[in-house]
Length: 143
Image 1 (spheres, rainbow, N blue to C red):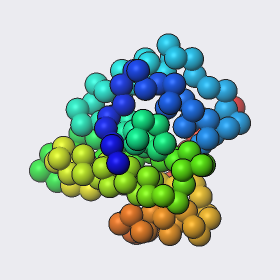
Image 2 (cartoon, rainbow, N blue to C red):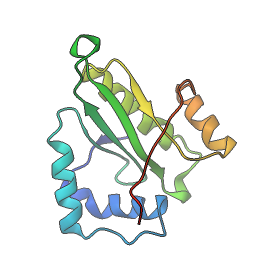
Image 3 (cartoon, one colour):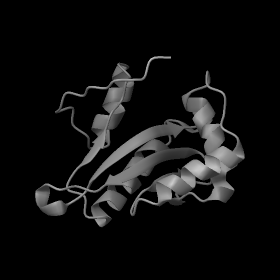
Image 4 (cartoon, one colour):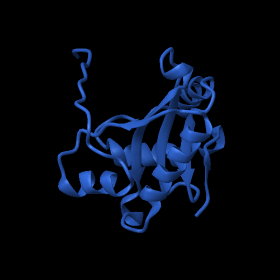
């Protein structure tokens, strides 16, 4: 399975994956998506991983840190596999690649949050090596 960091040429495939993750949202234009990708790439070690030309993706953000001897930490977001390609190992492979990239960047931990309560989704993340060990909180701007 080929997994690599996405480039601007991959934006159509990435936007198709985003549509599977959040079908209720209007897609970004290619121009706007390109700007967001360039912003993300300004953070060393960060990027959007893409499997097999567009069947699965996740975003990896490496965050600088003042604790843990200055070791950064990583956050994984927007994990999605095209519906027709689920249950074939693409999602697990993309997560393993993201974790490996985080370790390469010197991260001391990798975090992933999910809003899903679906036992299959939670089991998927546990099977990929994540443990449900912290309490997460979030706040969103009101519409």
